[in-house]
Structure formats: structure tokens, C-alpha cells
Amino acid sequence: MAMKFHVMLGVLLGLAVSAGVLSIYDGGASRMPQLSTGPLLSECDGRLRQIVMHYTAEAAEVVVPTYRGFLRQLPAEVTVRVVCPDKQAYDDLLARIGPTTCSLSPVIVGHPITAWSRDRWLALGASKEQHAVLLCPRGEDGAGVWPPREGDQRVAEDLAAALGPGVSSRRSDLYFDGGDFTADSQTVFVRPATLFRNLQRTVETRDELVEDLSALLKRRVVLLQEAPDHHLAMFMLPIGEHRVLVGDPRMARRVLADSSAKTDLESYLPGGPDFSDATAARFDAVARECQAAGYEVVRIPVVPGMDSRTYVTYVNAILDQRDGRRIVYMPVFRSAEVLNRAAAAIWKESGYEVRPIECDACGRNFGTLHCLVNVLRRD
Amino acid sequence: MKRQNVLVMLGTAAVTAALTVMLLAPRGVGAGDAVPKIKAVIAQPHFTSQGCVFSLKTDKAEYGAGDRPVVEIKTSNPSDRSAVATVWINISATAPMSPLSRMLPIPQMLWSQRCVVSLAPGETRTLSVTSEAKLPAGQNISFTISDKERTVLAGNLGVKDPKGASQVSHAAQTAAVRP
Image (cartoon, rainbow over all chains, first blue to last red; front, side):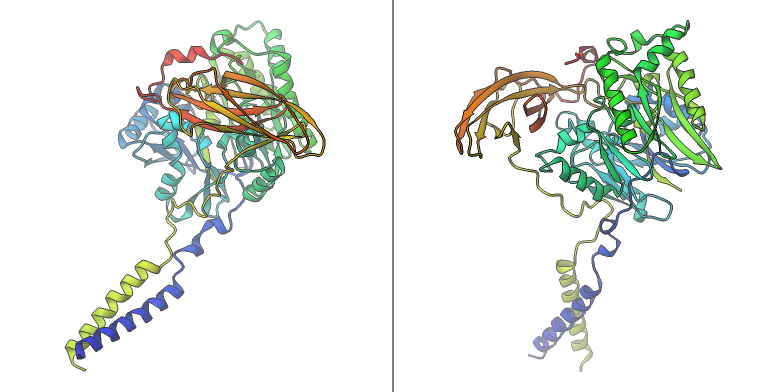
């Protein structure tokens, strides 16, 4: 009898203690970044501090020339997180890259991934002091038939788990690729295909999509009406001080016509260059919309291929703002030296120090430097 | 109170508290937790054009290679006037051209069906069409409704390749065709 009484007393005491604990403990909800995320990270403002790249040994021939050129030029203050399926892949990359001034560290995920970091997530609120939220899409295009792309869907969560309390991940209601957006500190430009992927699937109307994106990204949203059917940074990039660089196939054609230098674009671009009026008009439409949004537009040579996917592009770049200078890590192509020079001149006129990065091999796979590198933090 | 009774009471209290907290505590926010929960997709996409509202339903949620989907198009005229509308029902396919590729190539049209409907005020009509195209293995398939100016994605799925979806041949890289 006495025993029963003491057990009952113990149960009551236990319930009282747990009630006290539960009233204080909120499951970590107070740390939930979802309650207050910062704005989408600007492409062009602030010092690069932390970036993320993917590496798989299968992609070595495609990405290593670009990675080597880029990583060897990054300053010591930049930390590079390298997402790899396994440790061997990371060791393989280190051996191929050689010494760097910036510091590299692995994030081993244990599942297949592609080499393309940019499209996996958007960095929200990731300035120096703020908690960074990696906003990943609801789903990846082609994940059902493409195992590495299915693995890509998990990378934001892998990164949040690896990088500790300063970083968390959140899955969006919306379908998108990271490359569907490009932002400065005021505006985020959005690819028209984002509407196609979400209309009547996640949102009822275009206005609802714009409203959702504005709330999510905390920037003014310009959802482009017409554009080349590719990720934005293949044909446009905000470069700061209310300016946007927009590609121009007609300008590229003029540069080529004015030069006696030989190019090898016919063999580099599947089907050859697409200098059609219809394609050029899509680039022009982007320029007009940027102007209408209040931006100064600077045109730069870009050559799309007839497959609409392979580009010789000079806006697929990574920008840094450091020690009072603006720096561009600009893609260059061995098959287009004359265009490389013309594009570098335009970047210089726009106030940038140009650091060329070889992108021939990765460019054949529909993306270049900007597509391979995602920026997690800037100061 | 005897020492043994105190121990029994404290032990019981500890077990009770531990179990209660474990069962009732809000789940901790791990780094990878995706909260808040994402909202459900719109179950039945609608396409409004020329005064009519169109929706599209396929006979299956999943298809295998070689299947020919049966597409049901439901059209309503919610207005108080007669309406005639023309839309196209399209099935397109995209395959990853290379496992190293950044993105899918431009989709290729497998099948397109022009549908002309004439509806009285308030009328609803359903039309069923069997696709002439057989779905290819290892490709991402999209069903769209379009009036040539606007297009709504009415369905999107992957057709698994029984031989292994990841085996995308390099030779396929030469197969890109501009639509």
C-alpha cells in the first residue's frame, strides 16, 4: 500500500516537472529562421566570404579547368565548401586543383549529386551577421529520371546539417532552379519559365506568384515577360549601381565580323551560333524590361548555340567587391578569343577588374562559372 | 519517510518526466527540417481561354515506357453566352542528355492535338483522346494545355528506364533538335 502511494506520488511529481520543462522548452522554435528570413543575397554587392561548389570525380574533365582557375585566384578570406558524394571525390579534387590561398573544406553527402551548385538553393539573409537560410525548390526538374538530380534535391539539407547553427534549410512551396533568379540589393529578376512551372500547380495566377516571391525573397520582383529560354545568368547579370549587363548576340556578330581573328564557334556550339533575329529579339526584350524597371542597361557580346542551351557567355560570372574594387571572375573560351577581349573591355569600362576563368569544358554542358558556384555569404 | 520510499518516488518521477517530455515536447528544429510544411499542389490545374475553362486529366498517375496516355479534357463555359474555343493539348518529352549536364535540353513535342469546342451558356463537356505517341523510357514527360499565346502545365512526370535511368549516353548529346 505504502509502495503504491509513493509510486503515485512519483508520477505526480514527474508530471509536474515535465509540465515545467514543456512550458519553457519550445523545441528550438525560437531559433527557427523561417519566422524571419533575410532578403535574397545580392549577386554584386559585398565581399565574397563563403561559397559552395559541388564535385564528383565523373565531372572532373568538365569542371576542373574552371575550378582550378577560379579557386587559385580567390583570396584567403574566402571559405569554399565543397559538396562531394564521398571523401575520395574530395581528395581527388584537392589533388587536381593544387595549392590555393582560399580555404577549402568538404561536405560529404553520401549520395549522388550533379556538379552544379547554383540551382540547388537560394541564400536568404546570408550577410555577415544574419542567419543564412538555404531556400531549396519544391522539386528538381527531371529528378524522376535523373538520380544525381534527385540527390541534388537533398543538398540544401545536407549543407544545413554540416554547417551548424548559422545555416538552416527550408523547402519552398514553389518549383524553381536557383538560376531562375538574379538579384542586386534592390531587385530580383525572375525567369519567365518560373511562371510556367508554377502556374496552376502552386499558384493560381501570375500576380500570386509575384506576391509570394516578393514576400519570400524580400526584394522587388521583376518577373520577365520574355527572355531566352535559359537560366538568367546566361544572358543577364546585375553589376551594381543600378546597372544590368544584358547579352547581345548582334553585338557578338559585329565583333566577329570586324575581326580577322579566327573563332571555332561552329564546332563549339551545337548547330553553330544562333544569330537569328528571333533569338536576338528575346535578348532585346530583357534589356527593355530592365530599362523599364529603372536600370541602366549595358550590352555585352553573348552567343547562344542553335540548341538554345550551349552559350558563349560573359555574364555567367562571379562578382566580388573588395578593398574598394569591383572584381569579376569572367568566363573565357579558347574558341572565341576575340569575343573574350571585347567582353573584358566592357567589364573594365563598367569599373571591374577582370579575372578570366577558362570555361570551355563546362560550357558544353549548358552552364559555366556562375552555374557551378553558389554564394552562401558576403560581408 | 524511509529511504527506500524516497528512492521509489524519485525514480518514478524521473521516468514519468522523461516519458512525458519525450512524447509531448515539440520536435526540435534540426538543421535540415523543412518547416513550415509546404502547401499542397493545385490538384486540378485550370486553363482559362476564350471564355472557357479547360482542365486535363490523364488516365494514370504513372506511366511506363511504350504507354499511350489517354487524356480527358473537360471544358466549361461559365458565361451566359455561347462560346467557341480552340486549344492544343500537348505531350512533350525531355531526357537528360548527359549525366554531367546542368539542365534538361529543350523539350521535344511528342504529340499535339487541336481541340475545338463549341459550348452553350453554362454547358460543360468532356472529351477523351488517346495519344498517338508512345512514351519513351528515361524521359521527363509534360502535359500542357495551350492557346498558342499562353500555356499551362497540366501534368509532369518521369518515365523510368527499366535499364537504369542514369545511363544517359553521350551519343544522345548530338540529338538535340531545336523545336
